[in-house]
Length: 363
Image 1 (tube, one colour):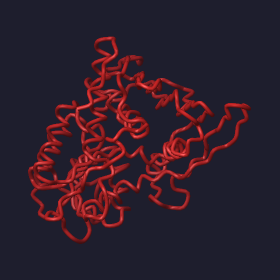
Image 2 (tube, rainbow, N blue to C red):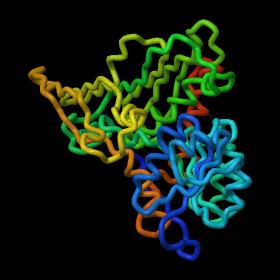
Image 3 (cartoon, helix red, strand yellow):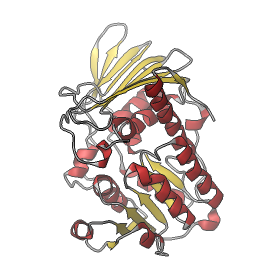
Image 4 (cartoon, rainbow, N blue to C red):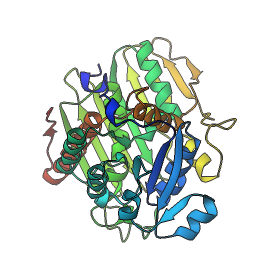
């Protein structure tokens, strides 16, 4: 069911631009994403060296990452000739601008999701990367969630039969609005969690025909949408329901997947984010192991059984990036796939504005 876009990858950097030795990385931003996800995963990846961090809080970096150089700005980071890869882990509004600057400086780029605020901005960054022959990737780490890896394996095995309905949810109970850019005007849960929800479904099923989306502010004092509900329509009858909510005290459903032969039910979120927050080293014993395996429901008998899957594997992303930059593997999230996510994200926002289904453009 997956279309060609998500069945293939684009080429990595041309051989003429490849270096040897460890990939020296400049991490731009040391907020939640930089501190919790990127820094530990980069440091754990074979063939990668976290060379410097551009941050406004160098004392925190020096405490957390002894021996890692700090600079005060992106400009200083780009001026360092040792830097080969720039990781953009800053607020969404500056992703495209900073990625553009890094590419113009001759650096490969990884951008934290969302790629950019609009598909048009993202497309301009992709065009520049292609022009310069530089690797560009988007950090879609939830392709390596334990539950998603388990679901992908079940679909590939065909045990569900033809999948007809999928419900995928990221629900949390955070009823108090926080003073952070992710909840500021122009941001919100569709831009924050939507890229994860959309990317996983495009990996499994390819681009939908259309999307119907609704956004709302449910919390007192909210400045951006904290509830999002979208339905992806496929031309074979498949319907995918995506939901993100910030006021959900009982977030029991993560996935509910129904096919002509069976159903697959999953609760609870992947544990890797919490493991990173706790300081657990990526790849340590117990890393990514799901404490709540999925439930398999047989369509004929209704019998239920546990359906354990593989552990989650966030470290796989940067390991693949390092190999791609050395000509030893493929870009794990190539630009065409990242643009497809932006296309659906944009269409969802238009649907929310107009109150109607928006068709997904394929090019």
